[in-house]
Length: 376
Ligand SMILES: *Cc1c(COP(=O)(O)O)cnc(C)c1O
Image 1 (cartoon, rainbow, N blue to C red):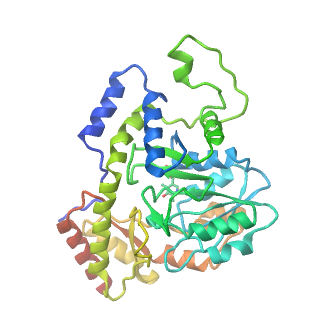
Image 2: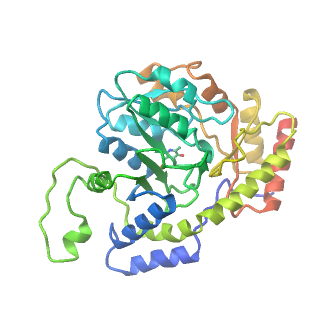
Image 3: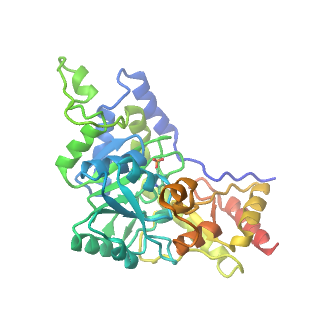
C-alpha cells in the first residue's frame, strides 16, 4: 500500500552543513548566525527589523508584552486557528475576544470586528489561515479608527501578499513560525517582523529575561557586567536554529512555487467532485499555500479521514474551533453555536498532504482516494 506522509520538510544537505558548522564552532546559542538570519528575513519581508525567538507562540506573547498589552485588555482574534493564537493572549494576561470568520476563506471577518470593540480593546490579532492573507487594508482602517494595534499571526503565511500589501506591512508586528511542519523549519523556532527599531530592541531584551546584554556580548569580548531592568522570558533563538533557516529562507519562493502548483492541481482535480468543496481565495493574492484543505459534510468527515488514513494518506484537521476546546468552554462559557462559520469549517475540514517533495503521482493517488472516500 502507498504511504504518503502528511508532511515532509525541505531541510537539505546544505542546511545540514550550515548547522554542522555552528555545531563545530564554540558558540551555539544566540549570536552572529542569529544576527545574519534576522537581517535576511527582515530583508525578505521588507521589514525594518526581525527578532528571532523559539516559537511563533513566543513571538505573539512577546509582541503583546512589547506593546504593553496585559491584564484588563482585550484582544480581538479568530476562533479558526491553532490554539497558540488565543493562548498567547492569555499568557500576556489579556482576554481573547473571538470574532467569527468569513465563510469563503475562513479568515477573520472584518465586517464583524467593529461590533466586538469595547473600551478595553487594545489589539487585533488576525491569522492568515492556510496561507491566504486577511483583508489587511480593511483591518488597518478599523484599527486606526479605534486606535488599536495589529499583531499578525503569520505562522501560515511567510510568503503571502494581497491587495498590494505584504504580510506584516500594515501591522505593528507580524509573527512567524518555524515549527516542524511550517514552510521553512528549524524543528522549533519563530520570529517577529516589525518596523519600529526601539520595539525591536525591547523585544531582544524581552526574549532573554529582560537582560540588557546578549550572551554573545557578555562573553566574546572583555567581560562586561549586565543588568536586568525588566522582566522578560527565555525565548531566544539559537545559532543552530538560525543556521538551519538561512538557506531555506533563500529557497522559500521556489518552495512556495511548488506548493502553489500542487495546490492548483488539487483544485483542478477536485473541482466538480460531488461532496467536496475548497475555500475561495482571490486569484490575484499571493497565497502562502501552507495547507490545502477540503470541506466535506460534517456527518461524513471522520469516516473520510479514517478511510484516507487506512489507505496510507496522511491527514490532519486544521482546526477544531478554539472556543470549543474544553479550556475555553470552561473559562469563557463558550458553546456550540457561538461562532457558526468557524464551527462549520472545524467540523467539515480535512487537510491533505501539501509539501514540495510530494510528487504528482503521489498527489494523484491522494485525489483518487478522496474521490473514493466521498462516494462511499
Ligand atoms: C503553528 C502555529 C502557531 C504556533 O507556532 P509555534 O512556532 O509552534 O509556536 C501559531 N499560530 C498558527 C496559526 C499556527 O499554525
